[in-house]
Structure formats: structure tokens, C-alpha cells
Image (cartoon, rainbow, N blue to C red; front, side, top):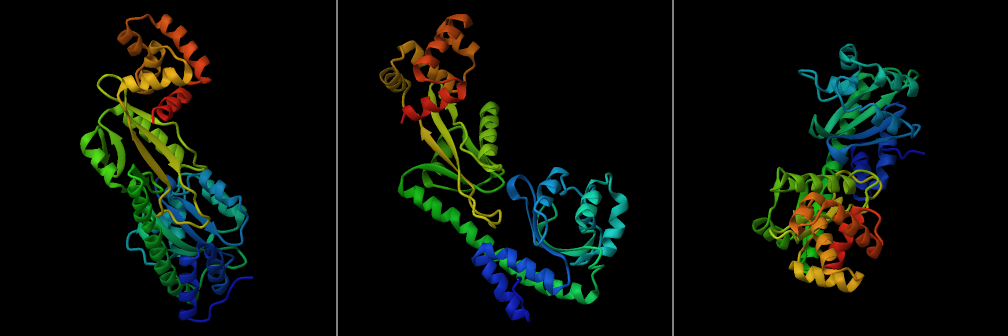
Length: 366
């Protein structure tokens, strides 16, 4: 049963508790819905990458994947988003604005979903952020609830003020994770970057900052990148793997040195995500392992896997991102000869695909 709040102080305490113990958000938005005579309360985030989330009280959980499937963040599909962008809209957008927005939709997909779950009516407000990247609070009402009254919207607006304070507090708390984790890695003397839910760099260690000034790696508009386009694409692919649900450790990205050896190996690891976490906490760690000279790589690989020096050199070049044609040309052999050597390398290392070999070369070299 939902917790009840009788005055502003009680609402403030309820949402403060949600910021400090995020699992209490569900009870808070449920209490808001009950107090306003609404079927459902909603806290929702829109934005790029993993910014998006959708928490709704007392509703069939299938609404979340169904909403995501129709890209409900688009104003030409979702009348609630379109209403939020109307000129001179008030702080609390409600049914009168929905009526104006519905005729502008290019598809009935969102309308059909609202019909399926009986949530055509309600009201909403932005808590933090801009239209393209924001956290919003809403009431979703069914046909029995009817349209919101002015009294209900006034109460919603007061509650929303407390919810806004809670979101800002939780944002500040989660953002502290960047400083804490950076400090931990600093004591380990590692070069690492912390990524937020969008994949952008939210913090880095001094070693990582120094590496930005002495290597091809740089941060562009918040994104980790390389001076080489192919390496930047590989970095972005790995970043998406660790950020996008369900979040998994990505294959490492090898940056080659001038001689074709592995200069830097970037490893991407997801961080655990707490239930009810907002999108402000660190979501992934990128660790840079600076490569040793190529001859040391060769020695380690020959000793560990009984590769020949030629096979070890091929493995290193492949891990550094060179194509098979480039490797064949550098070693003055045919592509067919290289294929035979690669089969031997895979057999000796126990790999069955290139990405596994890249990982092994990176790990065995440190």
C-alpha cells in the first residue's frame, strides 16, 4: 500500500528518502498518484544512450519495452513530448495541451499503446534538463480517473518541487562516484576513464590525463576518441557494448605504434547498475594498458603459446588493427601464406575468432 503524505514537509521527507535510498522512488511516485486520484505516477528520463528510463507505478511492466519499441521520445510520435514543446506552455502540461498535440502525430503507435493501457489523460512537468535530455514527472490517468482538475494539478506542481529537489540531490550523490572511483584508480597508478550513462567521459585519473597529451587518444565533446578514424570507430563500438543494456565487457581496442606493435590496449568494463539509479552515476571504466616494445610481446607470446617469432609478430600486428593485406605486405608473404600461419596461431592459442586473439595478445603482454 502506498505511503501517504499529508503536507509539504511529509512530501519533502518522502522524496528526500528516495534520493538517499533510490529503491523508495516507486513508493514515492505511487503515493503521488494516489494523492491526486490518478492511476499511475511516472518518473521518466529522455536522452541519448542510456539516459532513458521509465518508472511507472501500478502498471503492467510490458509497457516499458512497448514504449521503447516505438521510440516514444519523438515528438511526432508521442503527444506528451509534443505538448511539452508547445510555445508558451506552462510549467505543468496537461490534457488541454495533449488535445493540441495529438493532431500533429505522424503515427498512431503511441495512441494505440495509450489505448491498450488506458492512459490517455494526465499531466506532466520537467524536473531537470532540456527537452532533448531531461528527467520528467507525470501523472497517467485512465478513463475512470478522468481529466485532471485544477486542484489536482496544483497539488502535482507542489509535489513536483520536492521531486525536483530529490533528483538534483541524487544527481549530486551519483556524480560523486566519479571522484571516488578516480581516486581509487589513482592509488593504483592506472590510466583510466570513467564513462557516464551516455558514454561520455565523466572523470579520469592523472595517468589518463597525461596519456591524452602524449598519445593519439583525446576527448572530443566528452567522447573518448583517437586521431585515427578507424580506432575511434572501434572505441565507440566498445563503448556501446559496455553502456547499452545488458552491459558486457567489450573486446579490447588496440592502438598501434609506428612499428605496427601494440602501443596502447584499451579495455572496457561495465560497472554494476543499481535498481532505481538515475543516469548520473559512472556506468563503465576504460583502462589503458600502455604497450611494451614489440620484441617483448614476441618473447611473451612465443614462451606462453609456443608461437614461432613470425607467428607472434603476426598476432601482434593483427591485435594492433592491421588488416591481413597490410600484414602480408609488411612481412613480404602472400595472403594465402598468411592464412596458413593464422590457422596455426589460432590452433596454438585456442582461439576461434579474431577478437579472442586480440584479447589474448593484450592480456599476455602485461
